Length: 303
Ligand code: FVH
Image 1 (cartoon, rainbow, N blue to C red):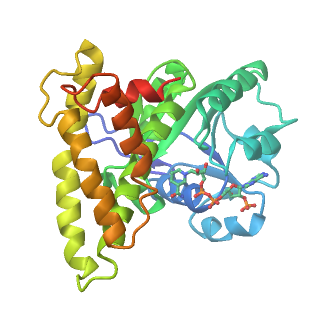
Image 2: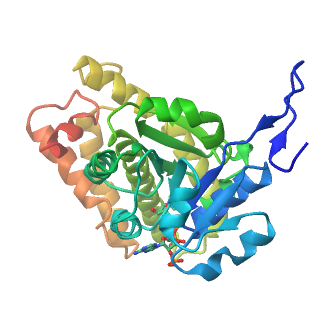
């Protein structure tokens, strides 16, 4: 068996060749991706704008290309993981992409992802966009639960799914090239809302004789207990009835907001993270929706 082959775990013992991968970008995430492919024997060609970042990977078996163009020319499958869409443009402009399968894992807006896929198609490439739902230590660790949203060319996803599944799980969300980015940003936006709420909670106890480490598990458990409420929200959005299955109605929740704001004031904490959400709740209530859930706030956000 050669370095780049592996025995199948089936009756057929024919060695299976690993798909060669080109990877542009060796930041924290790119390096983690590179190591995951190298660890299971995929031939890997890497390029990074700052060449020194490739040095450690050479010892692990990576081929280093002298230029982005040489890296792209090396393999049909080209994975890009750069800082942002502008850096992808800078790295790829002027490079022949004919016959390449571009998998862009750079975080983008949906519009950027669609435009980049269109641009790549015009250069002769097939294009798949990805949004990574993992941080670098989760890459190559299946039990971490990390995965990547993919959207765009379905045939590219199907052709390379096993290779793309090496660093993290794969979830295909449709042919619209912008959908992976949209799912990515939607989940990350919800994450920031959660971080904002947790920041407010820690601020409330900051000046008291309460150990943050004693609050943390209570907070984590409470957030986990409340998280399934998103299923009720989705159900209400689909059916259009925001009173369906209501547990704590909007009128009751708005009535409680002065308690939260006064507590913040008593504790010397700015309400700036909570106030905008409370304001939306009050606006919805003013429309006469007191028996509803909080779902109506979503309609106030959508312009
Ligand atoms: N790291 C994380 O936690 C998150 C997890 C979720 C997904 N993101 C996205 O992944 C993309 C890459 O992130 P990263 O962590 O690798 O980022 P950095 O470590 O900052 O590395 C950036 C790489 O981009 C290269 N680069 C920057 N500008 C240019 C340019 N104009 N032309 C060519 N390359 C460029 C940079 O090269 P260098 O500075 O070493 O020369 C790095 O390779 C990103 O979209 C995250 O949002 C990560």
